[in-house]
Length: 93
Image (cartoon, rainbow, N blue to C red; front, side, top):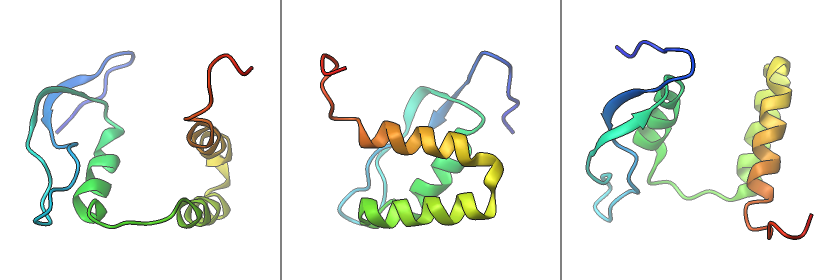
């Protein structure tokens, strides 16, 4: 079991590779840095990594999540804004 430490991450072998054509996922990334919160991301990749969805669908799920968990409104807003601006040029501020 991973034990989180403030300001550090646990070094583990993690599966974060893109899905393969045969429905599986890529190999282990040896020595990858995994934070305690990455466990949910790893579960998402394992359970639903081969699915294709639109960003509109993701936005709807985020709204549902915030409706059920209003205390997470700020982090979800930050994630959504970060995703929306990924392709923006740094010099367009």
